[in-house]
Length: 474
Ligand SMILES: O=C(O)C1=C[C@@H](OP(=O)(O)O)[C@@H](O)[C@H](O)C1
Ligand SMILES: C=C(OP(=O)(O)O)C(=O)O
Image 1 (cartoon, protein in one colour):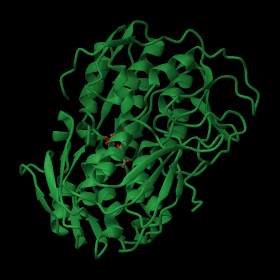
Image 2 (cartoon, rainbow, N blue to C red; image 1 turned 90 degrees about the vertical axis):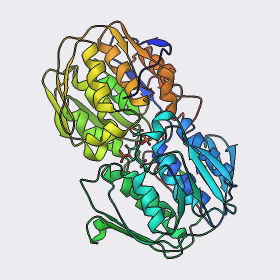
Image 3 (cartoon, rainbow, N blue to C red; image 1 turned 60 degrees about the horizontal axis):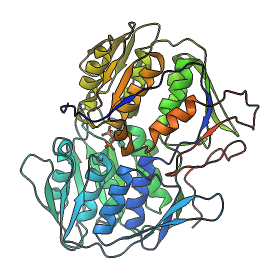
Image 4 (spheres, helix red, strand yellow; image 1 turned 135 degrees about the horizontal axis):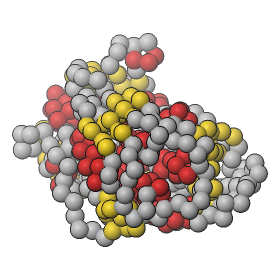
């Protein structure tokens, strides 16, 4: 856990009534950044429709540009929103990539850089020097790349691209991050022999994110063999071959929908998120089950996902290994529940944007809570909380967790709310608008208040298509 800064304090608004709003959530970070990588590696141009525009995705687009790929911004005809057009080109070095604190950029791009025709230097925020990268660095060396690092398997480092990579079979321990596996698979079609990745080690977290990688690779024309198709457990194979340029519609970011759905749960209100996909690999879809168990109910129909709180919030005993990025939000809700919660399977969160288990424990306890760290998660015993400063350690999900606590606890001040810009710029304005919605009951198909950001996302309200999934129109 890094030291907190003296950044501005944001007085988290408390809820004076049950929320009743429709909140259009911008595009998925994970889909946008995979889409950019696959488009840059494709044989011809493609577009990302409704991409997320945030710090993590801008870093990815800028890194592509630094290596010679054209990423152009555009706005489509009425109602279709913003897009990014990606025109692949020969990947070039020398180049410099700023990864910020984006796991997707620091893990997904070194294999791309190995295909460039010169050196690509990687560096980022101080925290990026602490986040594990050994799975990618060691694997790339086995697959034929030359990499200069400081011997710790972390950033900063330089990948000496030679224009191609042999590829082949490799064993990695990806228990620290599923992104090691995704990184090698995403570039696999461009390796001369494709790639076979075998995970050896502790439990692999974030499996839905690996399924997202496989799903998107297949939609881009790649041949992938995966364990869920009857293959060997923990072994993935990607065959060498061309990737297709195409149009990809980016789904709303369901993990970023979490604070808004949680607001309905905490206040006993109602929030609709339009364009919630009927089928998705996003881990945020698990919120339907988790928050229902914690005391609400949800309905997926032509308006999107409507979550309604019951006025009671229950504790939960849950394994979040598959959906680790939901942990800060679940922990905040659990601190306001009527019974104890145990969150399991998320030891790897100690290596996320910050040590999330330590940070959540310290900050919730700083408001009077009773949270203890376990070996692989958190035990949360609800207690009456009081106001105070909620530090965020440059972690977007700590910031939204603080906002959630502020709904029910007067006098919570969230440090550096702007850190939400990593994946959700304008969160504070969306939050305030959700809370100041007029609460007028909205019949099916005619939601009352719509909250959008200016950065991306849809502005659709009633009648917007459910199932805005990854779609090919190429
Ligand atoms: O591949 C992805 O897009 C992600 C994978 C997960 O990483 P870990 O497996 O490191 O938790 C997740 O937490 C992160 O927010 C996004
Ligand atoms: C862990 C996260 O991000 P990253 O992609 O930087 O790993 C997250 O968004 O919760």
